[in-house]
Length: 177
Image (cartoon, rainbow, N blue to C red):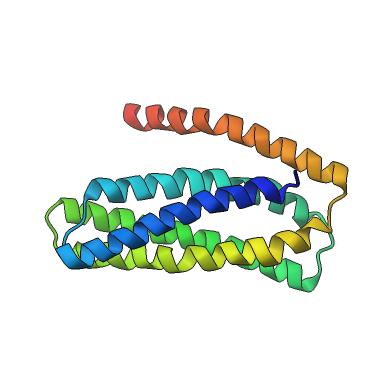
């Protein structure tokens, strides 16, 4: 398997969550309400899986190694765009959390902010994923030998093994604080 393999497999799961969000948006529009626990689940999935796990491998391993290479101007620009898009996704999730908190506290106007943030995620992720899968990942493959690619893949696996520990160590730290 190539380095892009696990990243593309993760994209398929992210797409399933985006489909769930899209379906829920239709229900929100018809019912005029949202289950805050669903929003919590969306936030947890995006923060832990899509951002920390998936984007973590991209930024902390894949992009780090690409940054050491003489990328073409186009590939450098696309990588920088992807990093900016990750930041945008984090900001959107932060806004979703704030809106969900307000909604839980009885602010019905926050429902519009929840739907706006969720709509942004539904529109953002498919384009972001397509850019990575069809444009950036194939181009980036040329910068690594097969041995380097396998080394990155091993580092991805190590990264994933540590994720569950990081998540729950953080949880305990937050609960103690």
